[in-house]
Length: 99
Image (cartoon, rainbow, N blue to C red; front, side):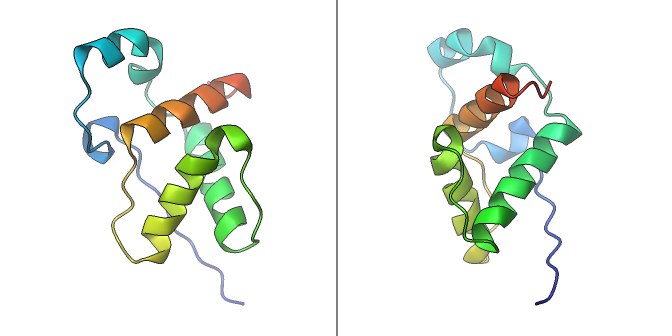
């Protein structure tokens, strides 16, 4: 088996393609204003690779986000993170103590 090294990019200004309304920003301001850390990126990368290569199911809280990222990757599309997925992943990372 060949090793695959796919580095996902997480720049909220670029990867979230949905328009975020003012109310959503107000509700999730603490999450939206945090720059993703390398620990966060490593966690997401690990979960995507565990699913794609290892066939493991991601944790329930981030399952949809990981499946969306894995789907983009496996289809050969640019990996695009949706706003809701980003919020779910950031909340999960916070719960896991990854700041």
